[in-house]
Image 1 (tube, protein in one colour):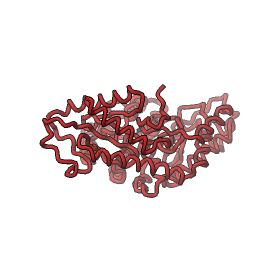
Image 2 (cartoon, protein in one colour):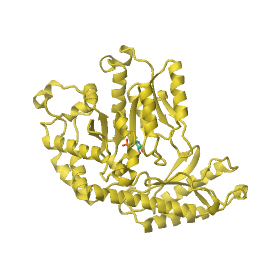
Image 3 (cartoon, rainbow, N blue to C red):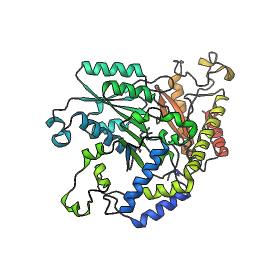
Length: 427
Ligand SMILES: Cc1ncc(COP(=O)(O)O)c(C=O)c1O
């Protein structure tokens, strides 16, 4: 068993279980209702509508956005792109892509965006290769000039640009794409704008992070995973669509045997996606939100950001490591750079280094360092004492720590950091 709940589990985005969350799951399990239509469980439907609207307000989304709870963000983006596809080629739902004479669509996302973009394209028959990956800048944000060029080239080549996925809180570094600028490119080119806020959108509940929401009101859809950053245990993801009716139009389909249980005037969540049977996920979310309150959740998220910055400070103070991405949420990416004389002479002293290392400068032994960074992660994880992950940034392997467990204290983090330093010394 990998103990995700252990305070030294520092992988991915951390662990979202808390005592109220466990109680929420316990009271949900024996009810075991199916929230497919309003009539089959009015409470589940009403509570889902309520908690989804709370989250909408916390994210400063206008009232015209309506949401639906799915299991994951991957499923959310697939549904969002299905609506985009239907609006761009209106009879695909009925006749299929070929029958509708649909063009070859293109979707744009940064090279740091999540692989769920390709999964959605696979599932929707749009083709994995039609997800165009756009380069990022030194802070891992989408390069807008490159995207403009790609769109123009695709139009010249007879592709049909369909949608842009902007990420707020990328998987590797929690970087944030420039959403307002992306929104205006989408407006100019009549593209669907989907915001992947699976991790980062939850941070919008912090008043000091409100600027994260800039441009969101112009989106067509946005996904947020309370199971990543709002303390709801797996699984609980919300897809918001500007005018939820757009989603319903694509997916509503009532089989005869459900007619008796379908009150047309009420919300039947089975109409908002491919799933018919649905768990009562809203109950655990409601329990958690009522227990912590918005400010309680904000305080905990703020602590994750504080811990991430503490760790970043330790990294910056150690000559053998560099911080490789800015810290804005609960994620820290760093790289062991060793004391190899091959580049020691050219390395600036700790005090003279920039806050975030421009580490992709082609030092002679970068690929050796890649292997060493992987090795550190492997050894620590194999020890069973802590767990972290590795990722690739602009082609280089780096270590990554995610803070998202209410049990992780500065002391735990300090122990993990010591383990990393000790492990590096043994290489
Ligand atoms: C930015 C981002 N988007 C989407 C996903 C996919 O999330 P899910 O597991 O809910 O499908 C992840 C997963 O880590 C992610 O980091």
